[in-house]
Image (cartoon, rainbow, N blue to C red; front, side):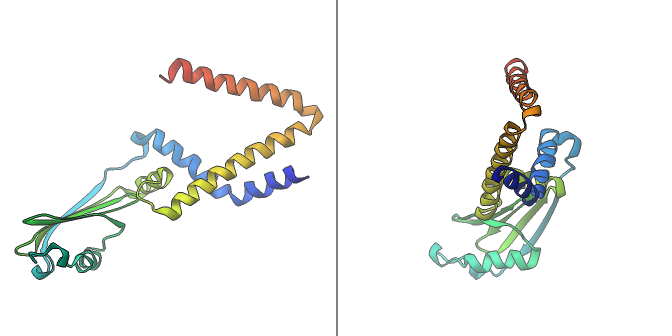
Length: 189
C-alpha cells in the first residue's frame, strides 16, 4: 500500500529535521529558559587606507575589505550591507546566530569592529526561522514542510483503512482540531 510506504519511509528520511523543528519550536517559544547571553567582542584596528579612501567610490576595494575581516577576525556569514559614505565605510555580516559590523574611517583605514555570537541555541533558533541562512536552507525548510504534510496525510489515509480504529481516530481528529481552535480563540488573542 502506497500510504504505508510513504508514511514509514518519509518519516524515517525526515526524522532528524522533524525532531529539529520540534525542539527548536520549544526553544523559540521559551527563549527565556534556553537563551544564553550573547557574546560580544569589540576590537579596533587599521587596514590598508588606499582600499577605502579613493574619491571615486566605485574604486573602493570592497572584496579586499571583506576578505581582510574574514582573515583577520574569522568573520562568518554573508555580507548584508556595504555602505560608502563621505568619511566612513561600514560593512555588516550576518549568519545564523551571528552578526559582525565594521566601521572604517576612510581617510586613515582605522576601524572599530564588533562581533556578536548568540551561541548554539541562538544558532538553532535562527535556522528554525530561516534568518540569515541563505537560499539552500530556505529550500530545506520548504522541503521539510512538504514532507510533514505528506507524513500527516499518509498517516490519516492509513487510519481510514483500519476499520477497528477508524471511528475513534476520526473522533480524536475532530476533538483535537476543535480544542486547538478553542485554545486559540479563548487565549490566543
